[in-house]
Amino acid sequence: TLAVNLKSCFRLTQAALPALRRSVAGRVLVTSSVTGPRTAIPGLSHYAASKAGVNGFIRAAALELAGDGITVNAIAPGLVEVEATEYVPAARHRLYREQRALQRGQQPADVCGAVLFALSDLSRFITGQTLPVNGGFVMP
Image (cartoon, rainbow, N blue to C red; front, side, top):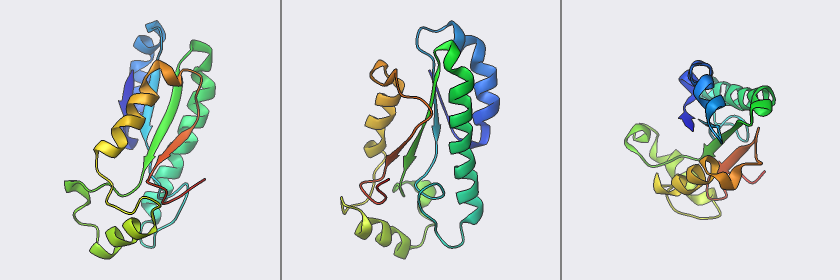
């Protein structure tokens, strides 16, 4: 099982391929975002483009690795309240909270269940998908 983020999804996947092929249930899980593939935020065009690229990567890699029984998916959280997002303006945090169906801040623990599911045998027939985990901010 391999959980990776955007910066190294291709290289890490390539490096892990021998182990993934030997495993009974190889999983590649990449972090995407609600921003980019599903919604746009002014001033974040570079970020949106990179996350759209992640989603393209998982679809192509899912097709390429399916013959080896390896699934490739992404988790797309909304704005999670962590130290790394403290720079985000308070107005944007408020926007995310107010426009979610679940109107509260998104915590790291809110993403954990989806990650565990995506890496488990329960998701063995899901590949090439991006799972939104954003409290209903965006509903595909």
